[in-house]
Structure formats: C-alpha cells, structure tokens
Amino acid sequence: MSNILRNKIQQNKARIAVVGLGYVGLPLALSFAKKGFPVTGLDKDTDRVKKVNRCESYILDVSTAELASAVRNKRLSASTDFTALGHMDVIIICVPTPLKRKYTPDISYILSAVKTIRGFLKKNTLIVLESTTYPGTTRELIKPHLESSGLKAGKDFYLSFSPERIDPGNKHYDVTRIPKVVGGLTQVDGELTKLLYGKVIKTVHMVSSAEAAEMTKLLENSFRIINIGWINEVAMMCHKMGINVWEVIEAAKTKPFGFMPFYPGLGVGGHCIPDDPLYLYWKAKHHGFHSKFIKLSADINANMPQYAVERLAEILKRKKKGLTKSKVLVIGVTYKKDVKDLRKSPSLKLIELLQKAKCAVSYFDPIIPYLNIESIHMKSIILSKENVSMFDCVIIATDHTRVDYTLILKHAALIFDIRDKYKNTLNEKVVRL
Image 1 (tube, one colour):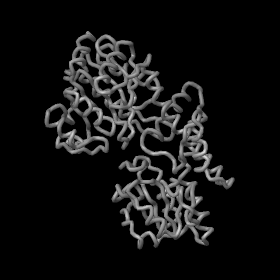
Image 2: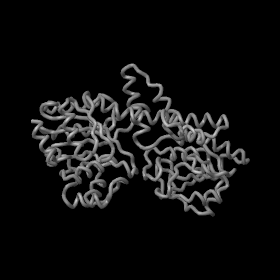
Image 3: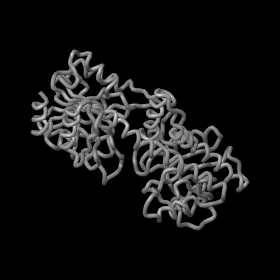
C-alpha cells in the first residue's frame, strides 16, 4: 500500500494538509505548493485563513508575490474547515508547543490536532509532526490516539517526526535550504517522509527513529541555550573583573578550531530557545535524570533583564542619579535584530522591570510602532535629537539595522550598550554590558 502513496509523492500529486499556518506552517505550505503539490492550510485562526486566501502574507519569510501566485494558481488554499483532512494523502502538524508552567511542556495543541485528525483519518495517509516536543511524543502519545480510530500505524497509515528548523529573517537559509531531519516509527515511514521533504528541501537526513529526530531538535536548541547562558555568565564575570567581554570573544574567535562565538545580551527570546530545551529537562526528570546544564542556563538567561536593571542602577549612580524617576529610552523591543517578532522578547521583561522601578521608560523600535502587551501600553517615540537628549540613559537592547546610532551617540547623555553596537567607539558616555 505504501507504493500508492510513494507514487503520488513522486509525481507531485499527493494532497497535502498543513495544520497550523504560523511561522513554520505557512512557509512550508508555500514551498510544497510552489513545487506543484495541491496544498490546503488548516487553521482555527480565521484572520490567518482570510489573509492567505486574500494573498496577504503575515509572515516575514513569506513573499506576498509568491503567496499570491500559489493561491491564484489554486495550488494553495486555506480553511478553518478541518473536514478537508479526510481527503488528504499527507498531513503535516505545525502547531505551537508552549510551556504550561515553568519547566512543564504544554502539548495540548498537538493533542487537539491529533484528535481532530483521528476523526478524519483514512488509509494510506502519512502524518508528520513538526512541532517541537519531548522524545517519545510521536510513538507514545500520537500513535495510540490515531490507532484508536481502528487503523494501525505502519499498516494502514504512516507516522513520522521531522523537527522544524526555521531561522526568522534569515535570507540565506530559508525553509528549503536548511537540511531536514526525519525519523519514522518504522523504516518505511521514515523513507516516505524523506521522499516527501526531498521534493522541496535539498538535503534530507533520515535517522533511525522518531525518538532520535525528536532528540535532535532538543539537542540543537539546548546547545544554544547552554552556550548563551554561559557567555552571559562570562559577561557578568568579566564586569566584576574589569575586563571587556567583547574584546575577549573577538580574541577567542581567532582560534581556527575548537571555539564557536556566542554573544551576551538580555537573554533569549522567540519560541524555540526559551522553551524547547525545557521539554528535554522535563522528560529527563521522568527518567530519573536531572539536566543541570539546561536548568542553570535557562535561569541565567531569564535573569539577564534583572541584571541589566541592576547594572543600569550602578551606571546612573555614578552620575549621581537614582533609578527611580530617571528617564530611560530602550532601543529595540523584538527578540531578534530586524525581525518583527515579540515572542518572549527579553526587552519586554526589561521594560516591565524598569516600570516597576518607577523609571520613566520609553522605547524606540523601527518595526514595532506600538506595544499593548500585558502591563506595557506605549507607542514608539520618534528618534530625534530633541527626544534622545531628554533621557538620562539610552539602552541598546536590540540592535536593529534601521536605527540612527550616530544620532544617539551624539545626543544621548549616557548609553548602556548591551549589544556592543559601539564597539569601535571611544566615548566615556558609552558603557558596555
């Protein structure tokens, strides 16, 4: 029976449903549509669905022109009607996997999607989970739910895990240029999944199991959170010792082997890095293993906004000013340079802490015109010499390209440079992290 599905994939005729049209699902759906596959994007968010069908991109890495071409050529459509699942040959799950509470994964979105799929599951369908989760989810959780339909995995349908690898805003590595890892419940499941993704992605690496694929994603992101946590700790250490951490990193980079540079900052943001390693921490605990590195790194990174406030208090004190009632301007509120994404941005935590300290805090961000998130309700100021000069300190939190750093340097009374934007500047008003 797998040969029927194999032939459909080889001929670009397999009908594909992508469940979840967020920053992972929409680029993936478009990639398959551009190769000629008939693709249906399914999402409960009616606004997203309407925008796709109106050819309006809401994802940074999706071109409006390419989206419009796929929709108008009837290769891509979007719907909130999940009965369409009953007509699909391939179903790819790209739903969020947040944390329920500290260190505990929330897989309710995955379970909801799987329960819906179960109601429409037909024979000879390939289901692929892309949502990041803990090792064992595909086999121990999804497989039993789908088999409760009466169909059997490996016989009536095929099931794999293939971790999403998206770097928002990266023009060089879009979804088709990043090597893809796939792992099926069986060899056949994995081979079908490899064949599918090989249609849109140049390099597909198949591992021996779904568990290995799930673990691969968590290894990648744990590697980052641990190294970012370490370099943030080094930054705090260097400050105590009176050493320029940025100079040290540049010197270490001259070694042609055995060193990879990471840079300090306010912590980590987005979805993947803050949350994903904690799935592994949670799962390891269930096996009686405590991952000290993951928890320690997560705690260090989470504390960086508080550390920045403490450093700011020191800096202002040297100027005979108190933190309370000081006027502070935060430059950049997204979690990443030049990316319009506020998810878990440590800059937002910094603003919250400054507000609690009774600072008169404002912000400027060239791509975020206003903030209306929990306790933060403000508009981005206009970056002018008059406005910059009225603040006691300007904090470079996110180093967007479209910021006039020369104007800031010229007119700011004091600059707390968390991103080392002024690394080549010798000016006593600039204080580095």
